[in-house]
Length: 309
Ligand code: KIV
Image (cartoon, rainbow, N blue to C red; front, side):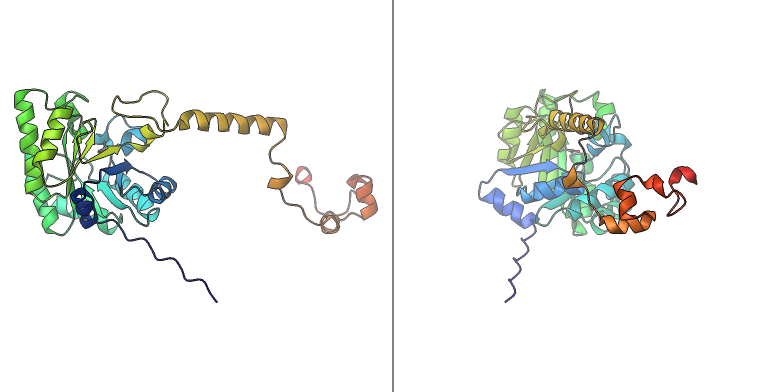
């Protein structure tokens, strides 16, 4: 009797997120940029994988997210989507792929869903992005908002600075978050916001706030996966915690491999395949007797060696 295949896990949707939020479950979100990592994070039960445009810095080595293109986002979103069975894949809309015209915003959001396999898109900006969010949501595409520090505007904001600390900025942040909710977003990222303000915004919204550097009072937390895994030796932001030290693990693995290659102990017998000696004799045109001695007993026979060609 054949075994019954186990049913596919149900894909996380905006309804799942609303239910988790309604049940008071704090939502864990991680960035992902490639197939193998997405598979592991999906297996770990992370409900939302964000293909963030942090891709530019942490994977592609750019100096800001501004350099990331639609082609790059599509490429990495496809890989992450292929690696997930259950998680909702949210694709970041790159700099100027939205907000220039409603048509272009919708076209690009649609491409990330249709060609990238995303289940939602994320875009930056509060009041200024309200109309864009509305247009995309009306077309049936779920949108995650992003306010506070919006990395695509760092040249205007003057760097990676905490946002909302002054009276004016704090009021603007609240207005921005409400505008994103009003426009129809299903969730909103609050990045680098003082924890009391983030908690107050969270209390006033009907949609979950997903914090990064915004304290524990948010409805969920997002982290850049390479920070979480300790992949970079040079820099860890204050808001990140290392749950592994992959930089050290990968470096020692590479050093151990190089040492084994130098010593001739890799590959070992368990990593190699053997063929029947008699067949090798035929290939090389030598007799079993010749094998016992040296193959140079019969230099004229068999296939030429590379060095003879
Ligand atoms: O691009 C990204 O990784 C993000 C997160 C920091 C929220 O936008």
